[in-house]
Length: 319
Image (cartoon, rainbow, N blue to C red; front, side):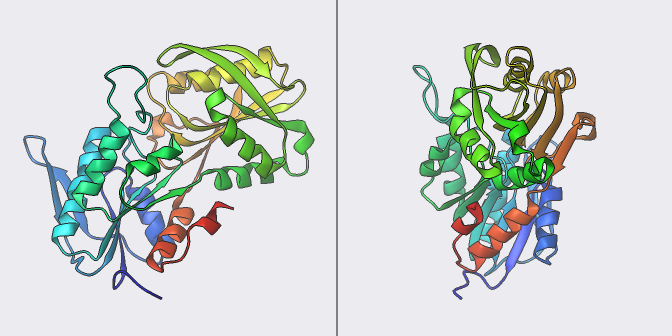
């Protein structure tokens, strides 16, 4: 085997300490000793408390809220490791912030996802490991290798066990036209038919459900999306499935639980009986509702890290 470093070292900044600890545990390692704090003026202060010379270093950091702070922590830790002669540095980003700003939607818009990619590359990262980018083409924004993991195998495995052999009673529904490919692949994984919610978005974070493409009457609906932000799309789709389509119940699943603004209140007042999420974004206790099921991404990321370290392909993990 051709190792790039003498050993694997897992480090965490402030956004994802629990996921980093779980990944390290899966690899029978301890989390690297480091400290990320702030100076009195608000600037980020970082200290690596152990040598990284010649090591394969993996920095686990979701760039979720506070997004800009977490991005800066990641960049500064990459820079510190580069200057400390790490053999290779991988930015492990379970959630990639700014991913929704991936194109010019109107004149004079920035493409912020490309800017963040350039910052990570310039800071000195050798590769990126992430999960369920909002737009797959963001991989092309980087000039370094990007390993793009999928949350669908974890979510579909859980739901397949829950459904058992009663696939005829369920139908997978895409909450909007942009998620159709994701929902179609998900439906194929669990062996259920597919329907689509057609909606028209009037302005940012406000949407109006128009109609349902497919027959959900008498079935339990499984809504599938990559992320839940304000939960408007998800809750409107759930209401449409029951009130317009005649569905008997609604489950929902998503990789990234952004849950900003009125999201928790909307979900609490919705007809969604269970919401299955991955822990790519840490949720405070006050945001975890009784009907939430949170699955760990650590085993998947640990396997990917081991494959990267040993120069084995990551693609077999997608199936």
